[in-house]
Length: 265
Image (cartoon, rainbow, N blue to C red; front, side, top):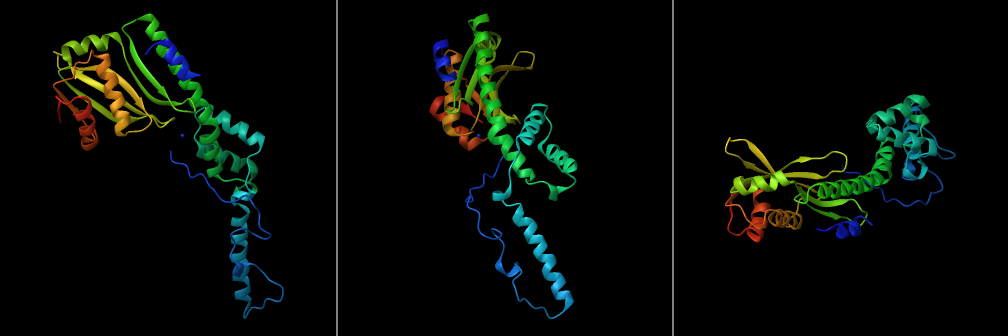
């Protein structure tokens, strides 16, 4: 991949994004009619009346916290962004709002709104910026040493979709210790939910030797095919005699397509 290709490419923890209508009904949205007080209501006992109004109080509070009634002010958003940049957990950020307001009922938003804002707004921007910086880093490494190899593919929003890189030392080591390798994807980065993968060989001292690294947004066949083809291109097209991986069934199909002569375990 040359610099021009990269320049062209450089020019989403599970979150439940709610899809309810923004139209606000006349009374309390989502409150069962049987819980709403009506003119002329009668009760058999004082206990029945007390219980009814306690139940009504609960559902009324819940109704006030439906999406239509919730919003994050500019000052709240500013605090969330600052705390996220300082790596403060969303739960602690929300708890600070609760304490400052004097209780949950004094807030017009819930913790889920804080988490969704971080995912939709804050992290998306940070992810795009970090993807650009990562691309610049790869270019700088290539400028320092022409034997540095990398491939980078971005999503439509300019965040990282797939990345592979190997330095000159890893490429040289593969010539001697690339007969049998392992590929592992057990690591997952927290901030952007990217899967980290590594190609590993074993040298003549029985020590692990890094033969390439990767980042992937999704662990699917197409992503693995892209990655293994990059690795083969990086290593001069020389497929290993054997490879050890996790996710056997998924990897088996990928290896059969990209390295048909390689024994897979």
